[in-house]
Amino acid sequence: MSRPASEAMTPAASATPKRKLPLDFRYVPPLFITSILLVGHLSFGILESYKKTVLAIVVAIISEMILGRIFFGKWLNLASAYITGISVGILVRSPAYWPYALCSAISITSKYVLRAKGRHLWNPSNFGIAVLLLLAPETMAVLSIQWGNNYGALLVIWILGSVIIYRARRFHISATYVVSFLLFAVLRSWITGDPLASEIAPITGPMYQLFVFFMVTDPKTTVKSWRGQCLVAFLVAFAEFLLRLDQVVYAAIFALFYVGPAANLIEIWWLSRKQPEAATANP
Image 1 (tube, rainbow, N blue to C red):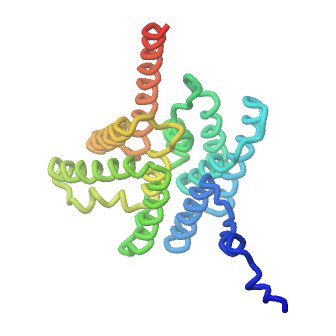
Image 2: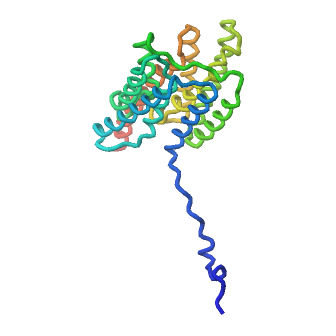
């Protein structure tokens, strides 16, 4: 008498787990930044236009493809270019189309041209936006809208963002910056006499969500050590504090623009200084 097929299965076969589809973590941040765009635009209309955002993304991707082929002789993963392009599309404000295209092109090009010891020094979108703000302030501005009194969308984004950067082992950078920003906001309010709520308000805006989760934590442009990363995040917040006291518009963008590459260059110099010493000590 034959046994049922279910009984004929061996223990090893029945215990074999089902294979799960692999998830490439490189594609999680692009999905997250897309969710920021959708939530922000559907709730508060943060985009200048869909066409301008698509233009920024397309130019960033094409620039990455061409420059990657020229400099490295291969087609590179385009997740980083997508993040740069969509960041530009969200943050740039201009009645013209060319700032979106030019900002994306400058941002991606900076990764290949402005390098030291094989590392690029600036976060790409931070560099492109800061350069255009310096060169064409009459044509371009940066998104500064807040989420209003509805903090539901902000809470969801902060929870998702915190989980993602925790998985990427970058949570300490964002946390250091946010805590430092809040402490400096209290100090700034005490110095200027402005209401504390108005000093804290900028960090609730969509620009700061991109800044906190993508610009400050960019793995390619942050220093290597855990303590160094926390120190740089604090220094970015401190530089922003000084710039805000001086009434500088877009203080966060310029603070990272100045502090980030300076920290990278100091670390590169320090590591290159230690390597010859190690070679001398161990012939």
